[in-house]
Length: 491
Length: 79
Ligand code: SF4
Ligand code: SF4
Image (cartoon, rainbow over all chains, first blue to last red; front, side):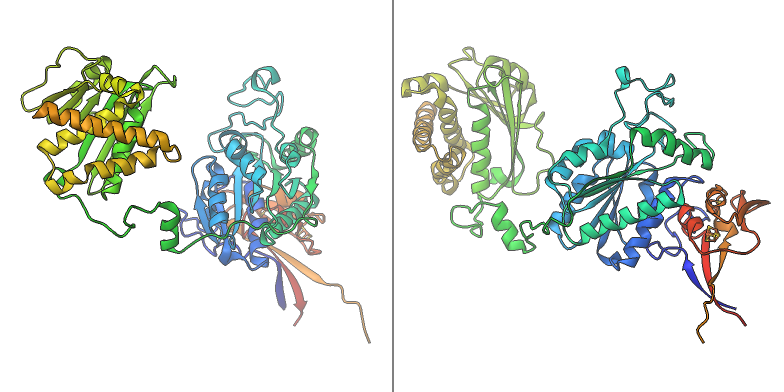
């Protein structure tokens, strides 16, 4: 007797599931009668039939199908809860030739990941999503899902879902089909063989749309979770067909695949030099002119903190310092921290300069240079000053000289008064910058490095206030003034 | 001398890949599948193909959630 296989294990699956722990390597980890297996088979069959396994990536969600990548013989990604759409966006944008399949459950897609999902749908990202709606949270043991039905009893809706307390079941197909971008939206059910064959058609159509690069295709799959719903297989199908489809009607909600042209987005760039050119602005003297600072001060990480009232230019002083470091070929970080109010609240920023790599941008101890523009910041941040740290404070607001520990320096500059005299109180931060330069020159910089201070400061100011020539000129002037004033005070 | 040959099929549920959910039992239009009483390596009673007359519709295959628990063969020749 000779015979051929008419229907058999889809080739889109691995022959054995080697990654599955334990001795059962031929089966998937789903409960008996679970719809995931049925849908997996339809997808596995399609990717094998279409011959696209070597350019397909299936994104496994968090939920029961978290290990989908154990099973599908194609590329696999497993992403954090709800982040499927974000990962898919990156994948299809960076590699438009790849075929991306999102596989998500009702918690992953309709709860934690809903915003990521709906935004990707709205952008018409070029991939297809299979959304398993089984009206319950399976993996965690039967909690209410966004798609649980009204009146449905779950462990977290023990009296039945109530629209007034838990809202209505989320109609995802209906929502997605209202958007302009999506190409194809259909809801199917894994119940009777006839319905499963409709689901099979929908799966294949969605994947075809992805292969043709026509944009976003979405198939919602009403699927059984007999264990958590405590139903026998036949009753499970009945529950879906009688209860779920009343609220979640089956059918095609949108299909404009034939009218749509393939989506064309900017061609991704793989050339390293081009990427760098796009990401990094040219440095004065060119990106290659890597002359470094020679002063021994820069042989270790320098940690700076600047504090004051919001509006005093605390954050921009930090930015300018960081930009200066950048222009002198140091790695830099700038970490602002401010209250909800744009002006008048407290603000501070941390700047780190390092010839090597910077581990963390946070400065809350061992601060080398603390710049404070008001009293509360002094009180708050002085304890963070390191052993040989330098405190520079604005003596126009801080009248009495702060007490520092032996080894530390406290240096006053009446930046506010000088700026006011100069004509603009807003330049107090630039005056402070000049003063920092004078202190550095006196104590820490080699003559060669010192000679470059003003030039570097001006480049950084120009960058920070790009496009505002008057402000740039004024701040450069104020910086020079601060430098001179400090120099005079020190001599 | 053409002659309409009725195609013949056979369904084979693989005992150790079946989780005994019973979906195929409900799906088969010819009622050719049933759950037996013997247990497989997973400890569940598994689906068995009883009798003959399979029409090769594939209902059991597509309704079965297990990747390889069901194979439907077309019998192409007899010796
Ligand atoms: S192929 Fe169709 S007829 Fe044959 S056993 Fe499966 S369901 Fe029954
Ligand atoms: S549907 Fe599959 S797993 Fe369920 S009883 Fe039939 S063969 Fe076994």
